[in-house]
Image (cartoon, rainbow, N blue to C red; front, side, top):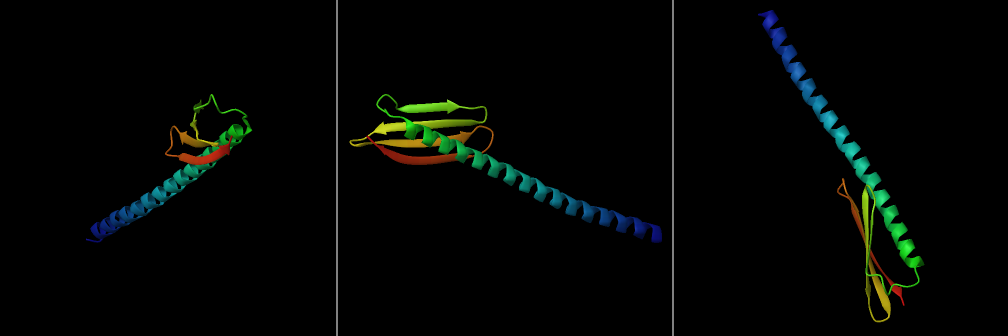
Length: 110
């Protein structure tokens, strides 16, 4: 009777500790995914700032309607539309493998 009770209590304790360990590992994996997504978002923002700075340095937008740059991890797209006295620019940066997308719009006077 004592051996059966001890065996049953050990099995229950193993089950409880395994559930606790699974919960701990899930939390750690979610934290690491959040860190990876945060890093990818910061990198996408840097690409967006680079693209904006590059487009602001250009003198002539008359022949430019779409600019697309593909990297191994990111796709940078710029749409330029001409209005009466300014150019409207829309920038999009997307990551291929992660669910990260950054968008920005601005205007440049003619």
